[in-house]
Image (cartoon, rainbow, N blue to C red; front, side):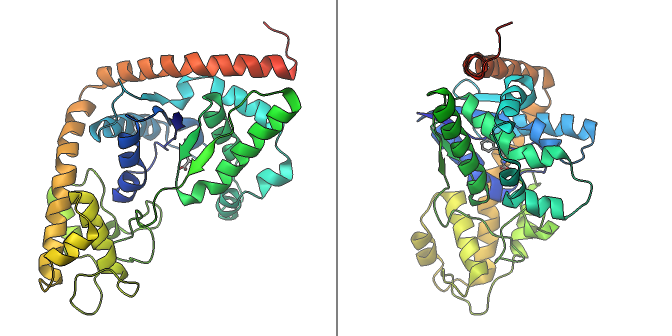
Amino acid sequence: MRVLSGIQPTGEKHLGNYVGAIRRWVAEQHEMDAFHPIVDLHAITVPQEPEALRESTLDLVALLIACGLDPEVCTLFVQSHVPEHPRLAWVLECMTPYGEARRMPQFREKSAKSENFSVGLMTYPVLQAADILLYQADVVPVGEDQRQHLELARDLAQRFNQRFGETFVVPEGTYGEVGAKIMDLQEPTSRMSTTFSGDLGLVRVLDPPDLIRRKLRSAVTDSGRDVVRSEDKPGVTNLIEIMAVATGDSPEAIEARYDGAGYGKFKEDVGEAVVALFDPIRLRYADLRGNPGELHAILARGAEKAHGIAAETLAQVYERVGFVPP
Ligand code: TRP
């Protein structure tokens, strides 16, 4: 089985990204043939600072490896290093009805915010389909917000196969277990998010320990004083989930352990648990990030592995659509 999932190099990664994506990838790399592009081509669909993009791409490589993604086990690479991505995207764009692209929910949302959005913002999901189909991925673990993009990738694969003969694996999206969603510490009814959370609402993987402690200490709890999960206690429920993620203990065990302990003590301990989870990652990150030569070497190997497969798929596609071989 081949698994593929991409990640944007922009935005500092937080606990929600760690739980929803990175941690899953780390576990799955040993069970499946895993491909993880850092999608810098997608990052320029909105205006970018060139130097910031370059830095944050290398930051993310170091972070992913520090979190446990092993470049010897999975294929970790930068999307722009493999020229087949935009080449396949072009072919797929020519098979995507304009009306369909325009109606994609994320595009509608983002394009509504400004009048000067790019054409690339509209073709973003088609490039994402190319990321997936190039590698003949069987499964694509993503967040719920990516469901329509996955449906488009499936449609395009089926459409191409029908018109030109079996070429692409039709990928399955997998959307993660319910409950594995981390909420904002200050507004526990909204997801923890780079775009929407305030500074105290989100814990970055690389936040210094004291900042993590402070954020957890000031997390919003609910009325009452029992450490139990329930619909009307979104704050405490979220903290229990976070504790469960950080320690590997079950939410039930945590509820039992903090029976009668009160919120203050519980929040202190959640803070310590998150520090214990992220501190080794932060230290490993500092080591890796201090050696950009090694990061470039890792990326070169990743791109080479990715390119080998992508080139084969693209050659088949070009032949089937009727291009004369060079
Ligand atoms: N659009 C995805 C996101 O914002 C990132 C992405 C790009 C991706 N290409 C992909 C995810 C291919 C899965 C597969 O999270």
